[in-house]
Structures are given as C-alpha cells and as structure tokens.
Length: 238
Length: 295
Image (spheres, each protein chain N blue to C red):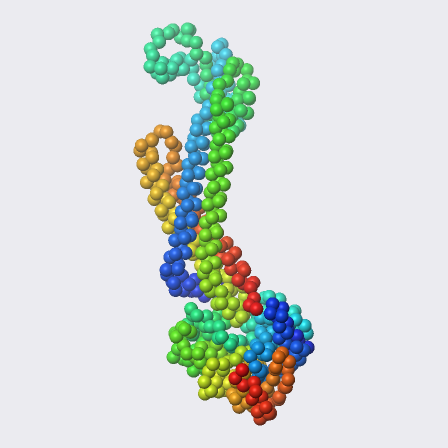
C-alpha cells in the first residue's frame, strides 16, 4: 500500500538532510506508529505519502504508483483517498464543525443526501454530536483534534495519516484518540500511519512501532513487541 | 462547476455575509474605480459625439453652369445620389438662394429674376465626412458642374483633431479600466491572503485548483457587479443632472448625448467591465497562491 525505498530527503533551503536511506513498507489494513524525537523526520515521511513533499532520492510508492508519476490533478484525487490528521489540525476557521467535516465530501461531489447522512455519523463517532454548529475557535484542543479526525475519515479513506494526534492532549484524551484510531482500523480496514512522540500511549497500543532518529530508521518492531518499547524511554516527550 | 454549483453559491453567500464590513469596503473600492471609469467613458462619448455632429454638418455646394436646364439638374441630382457615402441631395434654385440671402442679411432687394447673379446649386450631405474629398472629386468631374465649395481644409483639421482627441480619450479610458482592474485585483488579493492557510488546507484534503478557485471567482464577480451597479446608478444620475442643466443653459451650442442613451451605455459597459475585471482580478490574484507549496 505504501512503500519507501532508499528514500533521502534534503531540505535545500535549510541544508538539512531530513531522511537518510529510509526503506519501509506498510501493508493494507495495518496500523503503525512512527516514533522519535521532534525533527527526526516522522512528519516528513507522512508528508511524502500525501505528496506535500517529494523525496530527493529514492522512491515512494503510494497505492502502487511512484509519487513522481502522479500529475497535479491525480495528486488532488489521491488526497481524497488519504485522510490526514494534521499536527496543527488545519481546520477551516470560518466553517462550523459540520461544514469542516462535510468539506471533503463536497470535494468529491457527494450528494446533499450523502453529506447529511455521513457527517452526523462521523461526528458522533468522535463524540462531538453536540458541537455540530460550533466554530473551531470555540472548541478545546482535544475537540479540534477530534474534528480533524472526523474530517480525515468522513469519505472512508484507504489510508489515514495522523501527525502527532495526541500532542498537547492529556493522557486520558490521548488514549481515547488512539482507541478511536484502532477502532477505525479494525472496523474499516484502513491503513493507518501515526507519527507520535507520546511513547506511553504508543506502547499501550501494542502495534507496529518504527523508531526514527536523525532521519534514520533505528528499529522496526512488529505488533506484540510493545514491551520492547521500554527501551525507547529516551524519546518520550521530546 | 457541475454538481457543486449550489455549494459554490452557498460558499459565495457565506463569504460575502461573514464579514459585511470587509465586503462593503471591497465593493466601495471597486465602485469608486468603476465610477471613474464610467465618468471618463461619458466624457469621451460626448467629445466623440460633438465631433460627429460638427463634421456631419459639413456639406458640399455644387454650383452649376448658368444655362443648365431643369431636366439636367434633375439628372445631376440622381447621379449624385447614386454615389456612395452620399446621404442627402437638395437642389437650391437661384431665386430660393436669393430669398435666403435676403433673409439672412435682413435685406430687401428688388431684383428681377434675369438679373439674379446666384447660380443653380446642389447641396450634398455625406454620411461619413471622411469620404467627403472622394465624393467632391466625383461631383466636380460631372458635366455642367461649374464649381464646388466645401470646407475641405477646415474639415480635414476637424477630423485630425477629432482623431487625436478620440485617441487620447480612449487611451485615458483604457488606463482608467486598467486602474480599476488593479484596484479590484488588489482588493481580492487581500481576501485571498487572509485565507491563504485555508486555501492550503483545501488543497491538502483533495480539492482541485478549480474547486478552490470557483468561490473566489464568484466572489470577485459579485464584488464587480455590486460595485458596477452602484457606480452605474451614480454615474447615470449625475449625467442626467448635468446634461439637463447643460441643455437648458446651452441648448444649441453643444450637442450632448441624451441621458437615456448614455445611461444604457454606462450600465452595460460598467456591468460588463465589473464582471470581467472581477473574474480576471480573482483569477490572477489566486493563481500564485494555488501554486505555492509550504516548505
């Protein structure tokens, strides 16, 4: 579903070698956590999946096609199959919760009937059914995060990318968000990639954990080996 | 647009009503630019009209040989009428010319017809004064035409002046239009800049450039139309007042374009300009932001 092959990423502007020779593969329906300190390259990996940035060397294949082979229009269409929960939420500030969640459905040209059916369902799933008419500015951080998740999953994406979905949230809310992502994975079969530095929460999920440091993959632990993550204490809270 | 037409119009309505002060400021700026454009259009149209009126009154007077009989005069009238660009042909007999002369000079000459020195005259009006030389050449070549009289030099001077004034006027009007477009463009650019982050998010959730562009294009068009309607109303009302006053104080001197024709011209031109400039302004302002990528 997603393949990184010997990927290098260099930010020429800042002269930073953000990713070095990264090779990773993520299968359909799998949930994986990318962990590591801030600035280690987790977000860059996610951005390459939704083609906000392109690799400097190597190849990234998404849904069977090299990202360099996507045209501008095809990128727009691919992004409709890739839900993204942004680190800074990126909600449309002048739109209500309902309108924010409905936006990707308008983008794919869904009918009014479909939008009226889907949006309340998804908003209910993230537990914000009483906030449909609220503007993002009036919501708490955790609620904004939930709206961001609802918007990312409203059109049943094949891939869900979450960039620090628990950042700045208290442990209980963080665990709720992770549970929500796990529920989406099990009920919908969505391939999910979560970038996080919240080791406590990640360990408790007992899922695949890819550890990145200074742009290099230092470990890739398969599901069930969560106890090994104890050795990753050093990356917590960076 | 397609399936999303209703959504785009809903977005337009929300964008216009979300911040009424911003919308009012943008529409007012657009209105002032279009009003300036409308007024310069009214001025140039009137200057043009004055020249057309003056030059169209220039006529050719063909004096015929003394012995020309009535049958030949009628033949000549028909021949001249058949020439291209000739609009009107009128015969003035020597006795009528004498009556007119006496009337104009307020004289009473007791003169027998055989002593009347005035010749048979055919007065010719040309539709487009630019062709008057050509028509005069053809008439002067006809038998029994003794002499031609028309203000060739004055006319040529007038036509040259008219061309110069028109060129300058059109250039100024064009500059006004370009100025209006830049104002509209910058007004819309402010809206775009304030929503730059939003535009980026729209792209990241899979919106195509056109999906993002349409509400902005409609917004630019709406601002153009609102500005144009108010500008056209003000310009038409102002023109009506000025033309009424000018006509009552200077009834025969300046041929002013009537208020109704001018209003139609102003309304249609400003609406068209408002729509085109609003669309073009939005399109150009947005282009850069749709291509931009975040580092």
